[in-house]
Length: 122
Image (cartoon, rainbow, N blue to C red; front, side, top):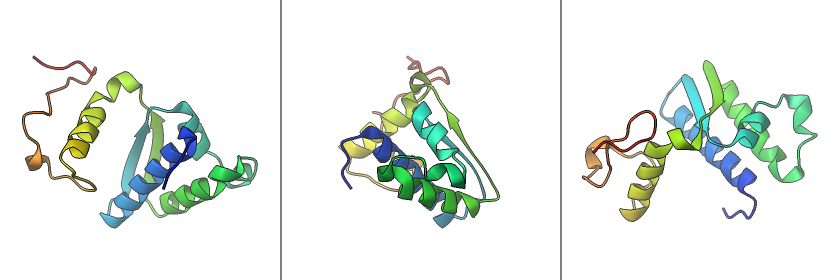
């Protein structure tokens, strides 16, 4: 799937995460996203979805349907500066051609230790 506008692409990523959570049998999930627009959009209620831009309505509806199958869920905004671990994992996965569920034992030394504040431990 290709996108020029980052909003549909980021919503698609959260939808993929929701599908993965369902497939893995998770019932309680906290989705974290560094885009305030995505968080606000995915918190939309059913009547509000029809007021969204047409290119994201189906994605938002898909996310809502998947989230309804979870026992508890929440989507929260996480500052990009606190998203360093996810960024490093994504770089590592891309470099090593690893996709989907990644076993933590697979990581090599290129994944640096990162504190909760996003700073690399030296």
